[in-house]
Structures are given as structure tokens and as C-alpha cells.
Amino acid sequence: MQGEGAILEEMLSSAGYILETERLILREMVQGDLPALCAMLQDPEVMYAYEGPFSDAEAQAWLDGQRTRYREDGASSLT
Image (cartoon, rainbow, N blue to C red):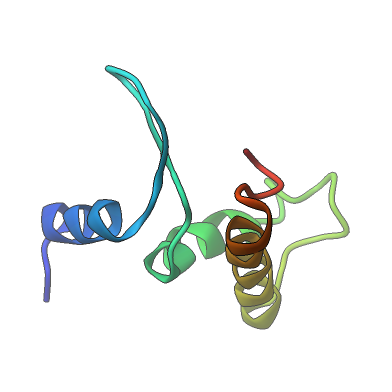
């Protein structure tokens, strides 16, 4: 199993950078981000203002949609 540092390095090397400062790196989301996204998108407290927490399939569809926007529009709905 990879350590957190190796996983982070892999995600950073496979994603396009959008913005980098001394304290922050904004980058395109990658498939490896799904577990962290699920932690947020499936949390009822985080998603209270939305229509509720996402299922696994809805979280994957959300990530797929963001990645499609990167390819087609050059940015996601979050950038």
C-alpha cells in the first residue's frame, strides 16, 4: 500500500495545475480524489444545503462531470 506522500505525489504529477502559490495548489481533480470527495459529498452536515448526501454513484458522476468540464471548457464549475 502506498503512503500518503506517494499518493499525493501521484495525484499532483497526473493533474494539470491551475494555480500555485506558496501555501496553496489548485489543480484539476483526478480519479484518485474520489475517496476524499466522497468524504465530503456523502457527509449530511456538509451537504445540508444541497439535496442531501450523494451516493457512491452520484459522487463518481459528479467527479466525471468536473473532469469532462476540464476537457471541454478548460475549467470545472469550481474554478
